[in-house]
Image (cartoon, rainbow, N blue to C red):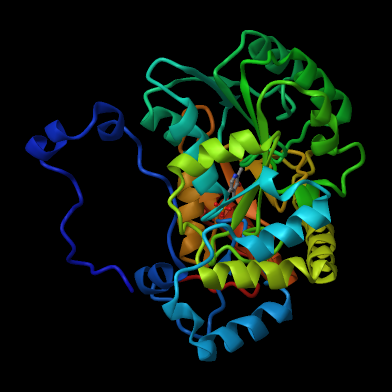
Length: 414
Ligand SMILES: *Cc1c(COP(=O)(O)O)cnc(C)c1O
């Protein structure tokens, strides 16, 4: 489906708004970005021009080929006229075995964002305090606000890393729930083993500790990245670790995430508010096929990490100081343990991102006050990343001095 250009603005009338819960009414829209189809139409990009879709941290290498085989079989099987298995039994057994945890300690979601929502619905009441970082993953903020909770957002250090002391102090104050992203989205910074050990020691037993490891498979290639499931064994209070098939496993379009909870009791609570058939049958079968081919996943993760370092190096080389009026003079790159880079361009990122769209490169500019110079670029294929760098060079060069000839590369100017 493509958006109709004549669609009426989607703003509710005052009367309708007055019927809504105040917490729902006041929520910001999730910034999901533009789809490739819309970008192609809006910027009149010809079908032969490849787009670099680098806004949503998707896996450019896709899932295991075993997934395609399973999907083809399912199309002919007749199974999709049946409701899915509400317990995800086959997938549950496989993941339980792989992680060496009891199957009852697993909970499955329509993406791990589904699980973020269930956690908020189970635990949060108006006035409860929720802790996370700034800039936050959008849903770590939106779902608590939906329940009327108050958010405490912790700032990064100057080096765009987690402020471990601030985290420990804030956790010690005992928020009702804490979203600990490791690594962070959008920044990419991670808590190492020593920092995570301190965090866990600081957290009281009455805090619901949620460790969001959406990028675990990438981050575990970093030195000193903690195996948090091991560290958490010593914790008495409630905790859950969230992971997803959307990133490293290449299944963002099918929506499967899972949580490993401290105990089956926490899973039973989440099950009370979980929509029973939240993970569809096709998604369950695909996730199982992907899980059984971890070799494919590991190869794509290793390649992505290599490409991330190459992209960072290429950008850093462009940002060498010494040239007056150098287009990248203000560029800063946050250290990343994930499949994206968070860049501070030293100038407003929204117009840059807009100009990149016209060149077929889709990235995510940050709109939050304090971060409007930042954008997040996902690591794509080698060609995608090259297109990004070339288009970025063109855009910032032109913005600086309209007389400077743009570099010519793969990317066409619109
Ligand atoms: C991508 C992401 C998720 C959710 O992904 P799903 O597609 O819903 O599984 C959750 N948390 C963070 C921090 C993410 O970046």
